[in-house]
Image 1 (cartoon, rainbow, N blue to C red):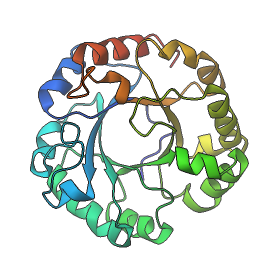
Image 2: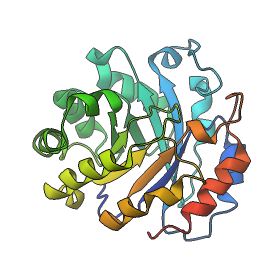
Image 3: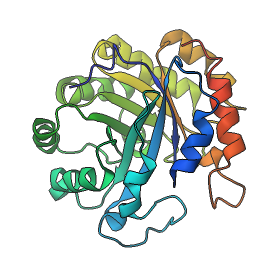
Length: 255
């Protein structure tokens, strides 16, 4: 299992549809950046079986996913997966891994509290893949920071590599800094930063990154991920200029 404590933090962009978009962003990264660029590609239970997702401009056809992921030491290639059918999750993830190809390095699970048994089964089959567990707005609304930290510590910390506090779900809703600080503080109090990475998402873009200074002071290896605020005004595609500016500002953060 990868050790996120020793690994570089990541700065994520989710919603890539082709490798040309990835190449544009990589041009602004130095040869040895302080973080990895997390290349997030969206897959759903619909696109896994060849159907069209309700957001076709954000979810590529499943047979094109492997073309987006390329071997570059500066990237962390992750499939972001959501499904309404969690009864066969390990099998679905195994199928996606085949489609995603050898350059896929893991998954972000946009699934509230996936089965511990399912994660353990998948871990046994793919011990080196990275798993990021999204903590959604729904989970945060139903779970206090202490309850969340306790559950992650007792049930999930041996099965995942990162948690991502994401109250936006890819829709660009601004994150609540105070709330994030509370959850990060609880995770730190349970020493989870010694076992797993901690990240946040929600309305991030070049203009909003400066607001994260208090969180970086609390946890300098913070992972971040952006999606909704990096898209064009009509939401049809990633705005590459906004993506580049976001990464350029991230390069100035105190990693």
